[in-house]
Length: 101
Image (cartoon, rainbow, N blue to C red):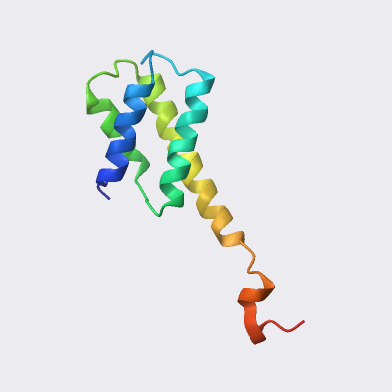
């Protein structure tokens, strides 16, 4: 699945945000997770391999470790969101007459 424009915009934001492209700070990791969380909450879906490929070809990332870390973060956030989406509970108000106890 190709990356959509909103995702590419966020990947560019990550590239701009990270000061030292050879390693990620803890603050940057928190912000990157937040960026991916907002993407999946807004309905965006992405292929983690495409995320990794994008960073490898972007040009300013020379060290592979932070690229792999970002790809892993994107995978973690998307998987966590998909798992919790299956566990959301319908409120009693949304249930209607079909939910009698």
